[in-house]
Amino acid sequence: MKRLAVYCGSATPSDPRYIECARAVGRAFAERGIGLVYGGGRLGLMGAVADATLEAGGEVIGVIPTALVDAEVAHKGCTELHVVETMHQRKQLFTDLSDGFVTIPGGTGTMDELWEAMSWAQLGYHAKPVGLLNVAGYYDGLLEFWAKMGETGFVRPQHQGLLIASDDLDDLLARMADYRPHRTIFAMKAKDL
Image (cartoon, rainbow, N blue to C red; front, side):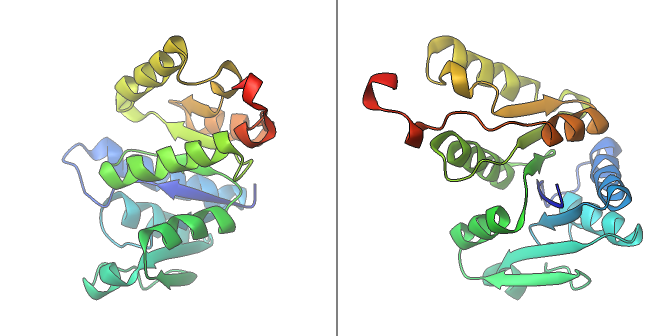
């Protein structure tokens, strides 16, 4: 994995564990020679992961829509900063530039990015690992919901391993590196669905 996209919030929660998580991810990427592809912002967890990666000598590629550049939230210190027009173009470029996806705590935008990466993997638009770092139990409810989708049959058995989740970054990155693509929906026939 040469580059990983990180999905995370642009907010700065009062609990310092979330910012420290973002900083730890940035440092770990730089130490492992993994380039960071992220939302291009300078605020919140986004800014923390980018700053930590840069401080540790790593590569940072930001992808940000024009509207957010105009709102003056773009991180001007990125190794590369790609400015796009739409959120769809942003997510497509995340996919094009990265070898996988790591989601750390965030809000609505982070969930949109995570679920799209999962949906695209399930369908077959990409065959890249999708990781979730469950810091301080932040994603416990989401992981329960993911399991429920599988139990009820809305996520097929062959796709239940799509989401690689861990509360430990080293474990998560190792499991993502070992990821083997599954059988996608595009590769199935109607009788398999």
